Length: 81
Image (cartoon, rainbow, N blue to C red; front, side, top):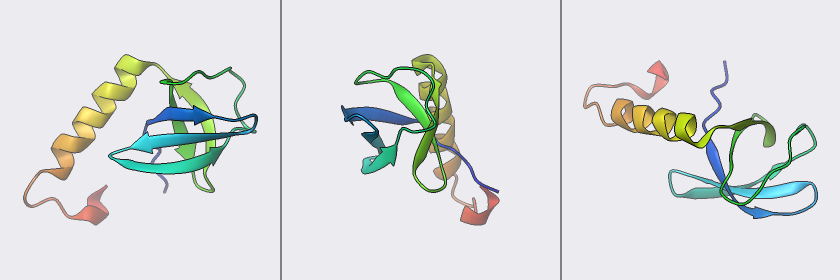
């Protein structure tokens, strides 16, 4: 199973974007995107570094906050995610 975490677009190219999530950056392929993107937009990224869906900022921030809370639980095993 794969979990897509919302990532914020910090740089845009023609078919590649650089995204940031939890302080980590990576380049992602935009070939699967059907919507136009702008700097600051949030996307979901699947295995293989393909962005596949634009996500509403409010929803993205709520998801990231929830994930942060879960990861800060002292007894949370990483495999539970």
